[in-house]
Image 1 (spheres, rainbow, N blue to C red):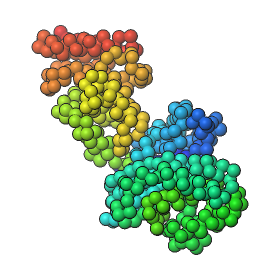
Image 2: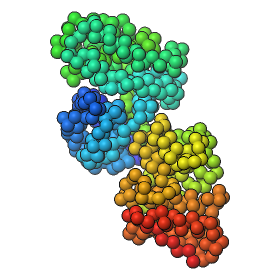
Image 3: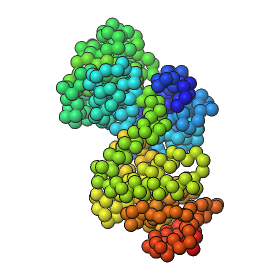
Image 4: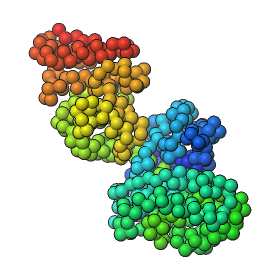
Length: 493
């Protein structure tokens, strides 16, 4: 990464969409610009968990405006992540499809655990280096993330489906603040958060930090009122803030210095959840952190630049160990698959090659469940695991490659018009055929080429006679691609 390079993070939250642009200088990222729009997609989920047409349009309009500012950025300079609302929305693919086109960059829906990890990264990067054990809490619109960590490393991450937008809609739908409404909201929030007691006991951390949305808003209000030192939230100050809300009787009538208009409709739910967090985690004092999800995404962009710093590579190794993968065979298949991929992949396919490598290393993780149908088991694991560093679309790509490693190609529910995916899939399948004996295959004189929709695998004279089983498996592979938009030809003299 060159000094002076601009990087951008787009955070599609349940309450607000945010755009953070920073400049990389000597290992640090300095803010250049920050844009925020209150979109409230979290309020736009109907009873069937579909985003309403109005909520869809609000999001698309915002992304179109962000796109104008991002004009001229390369793909490796921008990452857009979506959180709880789009994790829940049944029609999220509709939103993302058009959103990708409007923004000009792909939108990654990230799992709750991955959101928590990135939040911690954002908080830790903007704090002084310290050995203190940190508890980090981020109350968003529809989810609350809780993290334990030290330095830049998170040791425990969790996401709970409770937030300022969803709790305001559920318990303060008419905007009225009553003792009964606050009591019901806090009891319900504590019930959701209770499982955090075991993973985040009071003795496991030294300092509690709160990030982003609700915590930042409450911190601003308390500082303006003089109820707590700047950047600090105390249990007693929260009690007094709730009393002020009760005296106001409704969100419309709340007049508090430091309370911004866009936060007013969700302050009731936010304060309720924050009070529940203080109770469940036994917090007396919380520091308001400057870092948040978007800063974590920016620093994650740096780490993704090189295989040596890409957390996803470590996650793949951990999955291999957890599911007792045959490591030498995984390494062998990955090496051959990438060797083939390099011969036919277009320029600029380094990221695709890395994902092919990971799929090859994970192709047998389903064997730990059952050898019968292990590609299906492996695909299920990848679609349903919390994998640090990975977005859900990335995991689904690996899942699809693992599922498609054998059998008829045309039966695979995937985009077979996508040349990059088809090339990844073909190279993985060819590598498995060539490595069937679980020893290094003789690749001398072998080559893979493509012309139009036809891939051709060629070997030196006498290779098929020397390795008849490999030749037989390649012939079966050619049959498997029949009736698909692509074909595999063999030149095995």
